[in-house]
Amino acid sequence: MLTIAREAARAHDGDPEALEITASLPDDLEDIPRLKGLGVSRLLVPVTPMAGMGNTIRGPEEALAWKQHIERFADV
Image (cartoon, rainbow, N blue to C red; front, side, top):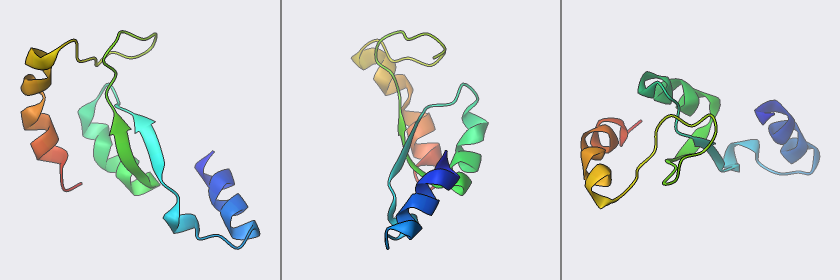
């Protein structure tokens, strides 16, 4: 799908590198650098349980527990 989006941008005189790509947080956080390599610039962490989404934040206390992960991948 990313290839199609980039091709569409080129076909309409757009910059494919300027596309802002958002993805859901992967179950395996070690996949984050791979997603960046694909062009993902933003990850969403669900705050309510969703089918297929293993990682959720259910409240402020759990958000604080994610601080170390956010800091670890902040520059990725």
